[in-house]
Image (tube, rainbow, N blue to C red; front, side, top):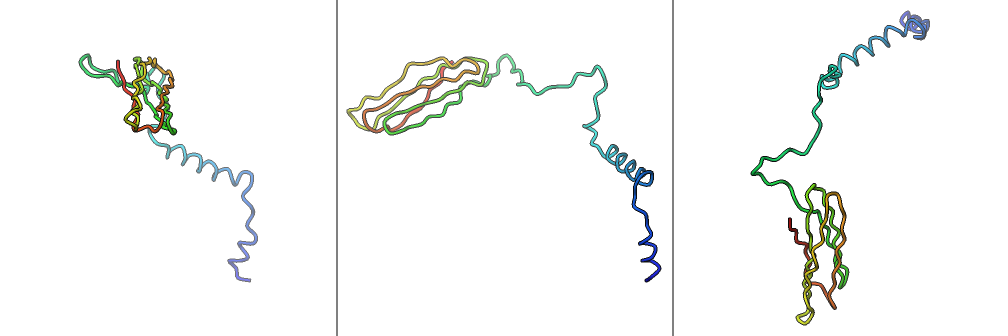
Length: 136
């Protein structure tokens, strides 16, 4: 047996007080390697939150419900959800394929803030196109 192997076989496992310096070194390295943004804010400071930016007096604010239109045969369904604080008046318009089939402009429905509305329409036969209009 070589002398180097003899020294390795007599090495004691790292337990108790011998493992403590290794653990302290690892903890200190992690604390010092933390990014600057992870440091706590001093007491009394105001932390900015993510908000919708306030628009200037002459500037347009975001507007309009988000609508998903589905055509199933001769029936049309539009589901609209308004994520904005101002109400949106939505209306479903259905254009039919056949010349004798009447096109339909549905009544406007108010979608308030955080409100969901469902609009439906139909043709006798096929649907050529369908869309949703928005009005303030």
